Image (cartoon, rainbow, N blue to C red; front, side, top):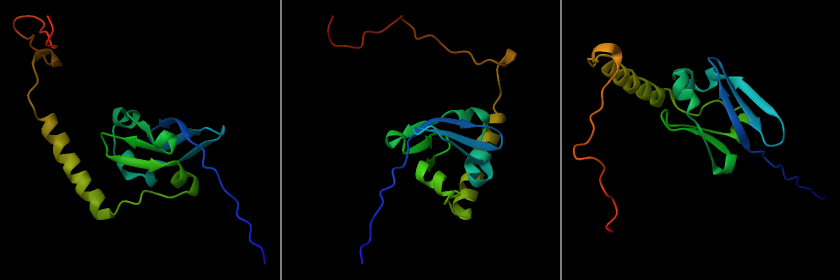
Length: 131
């Protein structure tokens, strides 16, 4: 008996769009795959700003959200796999996130709602050793 093997090529991610309830990924083969954010709890609980800050990893084999410490592979998306994170791990992350967000929102803000930055005294500094 002869068994033939078929090699399946996984396309790369090229573009990512995350809405309030959907993750959509444009693939290098022209397809777009979309799924519910409910499959990826960290994305579901993220702000729109955090969702928009992603980068491709492994030449497009995956997507990484640095602020959320979330990685999703194209292969996993194509297979329909939800997040593999345990409930315990997710709860720990969510509790830490809630504490950070609460702490951040209770900091006093300057009048007008904008934080002021100080200029360094003495003007610009020379970085290199050459003059």
